[in-house]
Image (cartoon, rainbow, N blue to C red; front, side):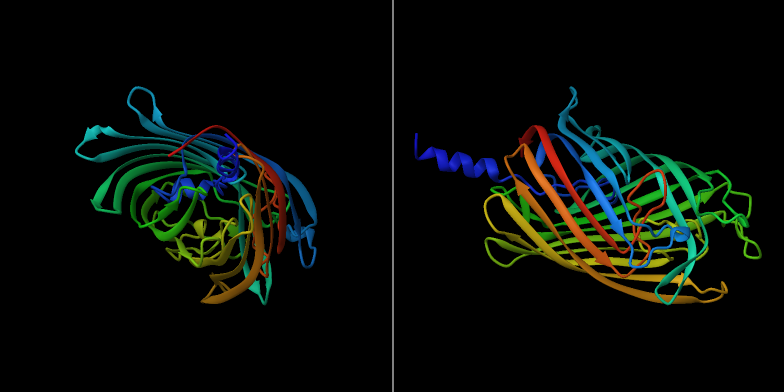
Length: 386
C-alpha cells in the first residue's frame, strides 16, 4: 500500500495545461484535447496598464473580472457524438459533431457562434501610436454546418456554409463625426484544411511533440448598403469578400521537463474588407501575423512556468487612405500553472507588447493597453482522461 501512495499523488498532480479559448474551438477542427469528458470553470482578475494613458483612445489603467466556462463530452446522447460548449470574454460557442449521420467516414458538424462583445478600431499608426478614425462596438452571431473527413492519415478537410448577423453601435470612444456601419447579414462558404502530427504526453496531459497546422478560407457575401467612416472617408463595404487565415501550434521537446512551443497565427483578407480588418482582438490590417516562441518548463510535478517572446506584423492603410504601412511590434511575457490536484489549478500570466492594439479586458467598454496581467483559479468537474 505504501508503494502506491507516491504514484497516486504523482498522477493526481499531473493536471493538464488547458486554457480553452473561442479561437481554439473555431479555428482548429481537431485540436489537442486531453479529456474525453470535462466541465471546466475558470475565474479570476485581469488588469491592464498602458505605457501612456489616453482615455480617448481606450488606454487606461484598470482591473476587471475575467472567466470562462468549457464543457466537452465525446459520448453525448445515444449517437455518441461530441458536444462542446464554451462561454468567455472572447465569445460564445456550442457545437455538435457526428460521424454516423452521413457515414462513409464523413463528420457532420453543427456550430453556433457568437461574439457579443466586439470592439472595432478603425484607425492608422503614426509611429507607435494608433490614431483612431473611429472606435466603435459590435456583435455578431453565426450558424455553421460543416462536412469533413480525413483525406489521408493526419490530414483533415472540411467544407460548409455559414450565415452571420452583425450589429453595431456607438461607444464612448466614437467621434460624433464618425458614422458606424449599418446592421447587416452575411453568408458564405468556409473551407478548413488541417494537418496534425501531435504526440501527447499522457502522464502530464500536455502535447510533447509534433504540430497542428490549420488553414481556413472563406468567401462571403453581405447585404450592407450604407457607407460608414469619418467625414470625407466614408465608403461602403464590398458586396463580396475573400479571407484566408492560418494557425500553427508546434511542439519541440528539449528534455523530459522542457518543451519548446511555437504558436503562430495570421491572416490575409480582401483589402476592401474594411470591417474585418479593424477587429480589435488581433493585429489590425488586411495582412497580419502574431507569433510566440515559448519555453515550457516543468519545475516540479505540479508547477509549470513558460516564458516567451512575441512578435506581431500589421499591414494597415496610411493616414491619407492611400497606400499602406507595414508595422512590426515586439514583446514578451510569462505564463504559469500551479496544480493543487487534477480538479483544481491556479493560472497566471503577465505580458507586454509595444502595440496599443491589444484585446480589451472588459466586455462593457473598450479598455486596453500594452501591459496585461491575470490571476485566476481553474476548477475541473467530472473529468475523464482519454
